[in-house]
Amino acid sequence: MQTAALLHLLQLASPSLPIGAYSYSQGLEAAIERGTVTNELTARSWIVSNLQEVAAYFEAPVLWRLMQAFAQRDFATVSKWTDIFLAGRDTAEFRAETIQMGYSLGKLIAELKIADSGLLAGMQSHTDLPYPTALACAAVALNIPHEAVIHASLFSWVENQVLVCVKSVPLGQVSGQRLLLSLRAEIEDAARLAMRLEDDDLSNWAPGLSLLSMQHEVQFHRLYRS
Image (tube, rainbow, N blue to C red; front, top):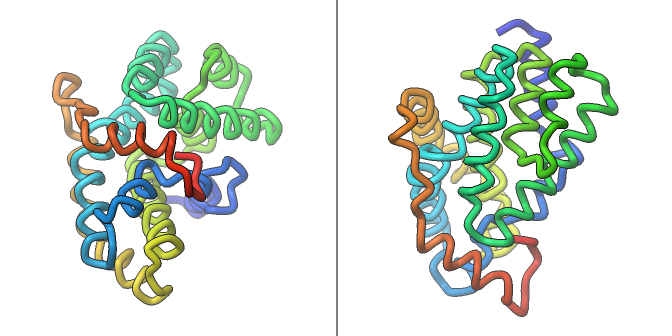
């Protein structure tokens, strides 16, 4: 990867990017509240399970297809996968999360003027803009290799989950970094799977996670928005 593309990717994947990713746990806070995640071992099990069964089978493959569609200026396909992703957000929290992050990133893309008018129009044509669509637009506009974006997006998701565990289980900082370091192989496996799945293989089937998300919507004590 060229240095410029690497630096752009680091900026997109940075926790300091002002899109609010830190404010979401994606069901993990509910799992901690119910005693499913209580230590480093159970935290790792939770993260690996959701990485392999949710992120690798739906979120990352959709992102992969959105990047290809933006690169080809195929905005009909962009709209198709945007609609599919939104339809796959099966709780109010999950839908609100992706729309809020997508709106924030889309606004940032426009204000930084990193996308040309064609890409920007293709992104802004959606009333509800999910995060993967905005991220795909930014990645294509900045000429970042698609494979690198998949790896970075999965790492960012894992890193956020680890940070939730560090703050809420709680785990120590060293424990959190050991956990993050131990997940390299699983992230690589998830990325390879996401990039080779056929359309009919995609699935967001995770009823346990959906139930936890719905329970979290009425959870009394909580730090996170999902």
